[in-house]
Length: 263
Ligand SMILES: [Zn+2]
Image 1 (cartoon, helix red, strand yellow):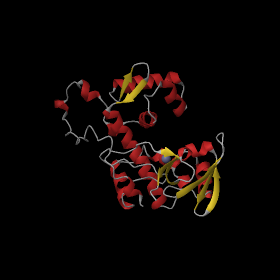
Image 2 (spheres, protein in one colour; image 1 turned 180 degrees about the horizontal axis):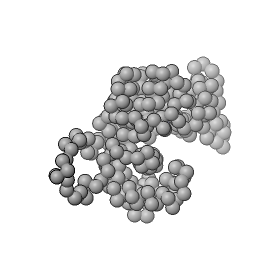
Image 3 (spheres, rainbow, N blue to C red; image 1 turned 90 degrees about the horizontal axis):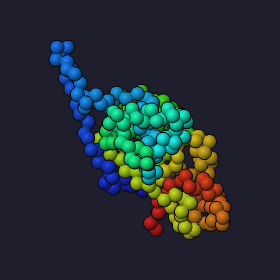
Image 4 (cartoon, rainbow, N blue to C red; image 1 turned 45 degrees about the vertical axis):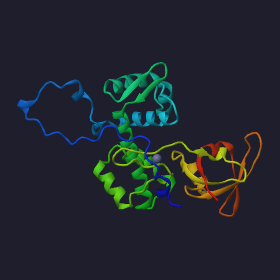
């Protein structure tokens, strides 16, 4: 089964605010004092640090909670005090909303901006692998830099050139250019039952060493494996992968998202 068939479910989060066409330029004499809404940043003019904040908060929310300052600080490797200042600014700009005692969540505008950066990241990764022959462990760092520089037109052309893939090389869904994506959390290999056949859907993309290790075990998105055994007390899980017996540790299995294969 192809990745395309897996992603036919209706998107969970339709785009709340459609992209607006650029307004005609004002002549000097027509310039007025900006209203509150006019001061809000356009999502296509955000700085790289702002885009990284929004992307990080999106990831924390995806894991199921509002984003607390400490979580953001930890992920971005920035002091919590600096994070508080930036978070306040982004809330003033209408990109984040505070949730009492819990942290912040993206507003629809903030979410649109986050998904736009994530689309760029994942299209760039897919393009580097499919058009330029990069290995899957060599694209994340490139995409981290290029995601802030590439225009939407360039990203759309790159996606078109490689046949509009629905997932990136690590199995993460690529948001559409309209800003929708289905990131329903999947089960992990750690939860699969002994005897069950599962398809590997998605792996974390951030650790090149881990990706090379998975490659050495034959573990890539779309590969079907059978769980042969599981040692007690979080011990290793034994798998059949393409006719070979393999073992993965419990900690690694938690990072491998899978779906059941109907037999
Ligand atoms: Zn990546």
